[in-house]
Structures are given as structure tokens and as C-alpha cells.
Image (cartoon, rainbow, N blue to C red; front, side):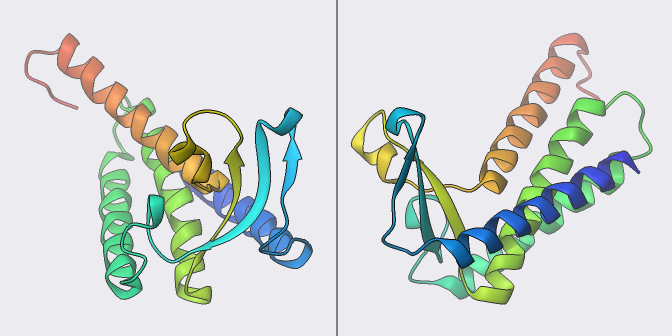
Length: 159
């Protein structure tokens, strides 16, 4: 039940933030925060990170749905297992963030992104994210860490 609550919390909080950004911010507006290291700017992304497949939104929607379905199935499979807490948390993070972005794709035809960074390489500074993206990334890192730790501790590699 905890992991379902996590998914719902991520989804609902991101819906609120994205709705706020759509109502309050324009696409051209930039609002620097933290001395310009973080920049609020609304961006509509029809593709994946770095606008990958932005010219093929239908394919992107199918891929997004398939990946979210796989993550959700993996979480359902793991729910009854006690020793996989980090893995389940990672899968819940990925499912919550992925669900939020998939909802955008289905209802708006694009994902609402709103955070970029004012430091680092130019290519990195051009990217625009949302909190759901950070949950997906963090979830993937948690899952990878759990798998690596389990394979290191257990020669059989059972999860």
C-alpha cells in the first residue's frame, strides 16, 4: 500500500505544479532562482529527453506506455517480497513520475517541463526537466543500486 501512496503522491503533486506552471507562466518567461543556478521556464516537450523522437509523438507515446507498463508489472511482481524495499521504492518513483508524464502526453499531447539549470555545459543548460523526470531518474538509480548490491552479496543474483 505504501508504494501505491508514493505513486499517487508523485502523480498528484506533479499535476498541481504543472497546472500552476501552465496557468501562471508563459513559454518565453524565465525566472532565475538560487542566483541563476536554477531557472523556472515553461517548456512543452513532445519527445523524450533532449527532444528525442519529438517529431514522432505517436511512437513516443507507445514507448512511454510500454516502459510504464513494464515498470508497473515489475512493481506488482515485487510487492509481496520483503527483501526488495529499495527496488520497490525505485519502481514506485519511476511509476509515479512516468505516470505523470504519460498523463500529460495523453491529455495535452506534450509533457510540461519547467526546470533548467544555469550551470554546466551548454548542452546541459538547454535541457528542461520537471520533478517527474527527477523521480524517474532517482528510481532508476535506486533500482540499479539494489540490483548491483544484490548481485554483489548473492552469487545467485536472486532479487
